[in-house]
Amino acid sequence: MRWVNRHVRRREAVLIGAVPILLLVLLYLFLAAQRHAINPLDKILPLPGGMAEGMANLLFNTDQLTGKIIFWADTFASLQRLGIGLGIATLFTLLIGLVLGVLPPMRATFGPLVTVIAVIPPIALLPILFIALGLGETAKVALIVIGIAPVMIRDITAYVSGLPREQIIKAQTLGASSWQIMIRVALPQAMPRLLHAMRLALGPAWVFLISAEAIASDIGLGYRIFLVRRYLSMDVIIPYVAWIALLAIAMDAVLVLISKRMFPWAHGAGH
Image (cartoon, rainbow, N blue to C red; front, side, top):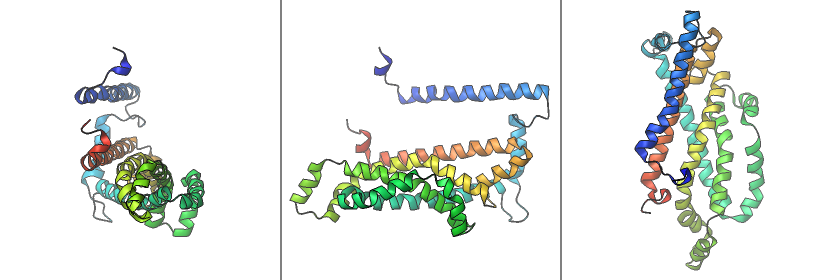
């Protein structure tokens, strides 16, 4: 049987997918052990025991100034910023994407503007945002929104505008207005695509969040990583990066679950 025709079962896929990750972990442990055999004080590749020791203060001790556990305070602050930014971007995407996708005159008028904004590197706008909005939470959230919303809008606009023309004609034959077509025809079909666009935007959203926190913040996962890097504290940086990856994976899994539960037809259920 050719590999192109071979389908992997879910249980097999989990086992096969875990192999490369396990190999990377083993490779890291091997290289770390070698470095520590040469130099027991090596900070570049800390051993698991060193990372556990480095994270102990952040995980179990409270900050004397805030009275909060540092690790969980960083996590909550970052997730709050990410959630607000992703929520606002998703709302803009839904509203603007539907309007541009359903109404050709609006798409011809504002489509080029969305394209121009989408191709501007959001990190380049960071100084402008901090000058215009200050160093508070607004600028950080705005960077996430500006960074992911235009790309999501373009995706939803293209998807909605590509819906079969027969659906629009049939709806108009039944007396539907442009508003009703947008709500009753385009919206239900765009929702699975919107969740997919959110999944694709998670990675860039984390990048913009970490960048904003690294430049102007006093709490957050990105702030902590860039704070301890001056001390070469890889025993803290690596667990923080791994934690960010786990959070991103969990968020992606939740979006997939929501999509499959709410829109099973978009995942081939029943076929």
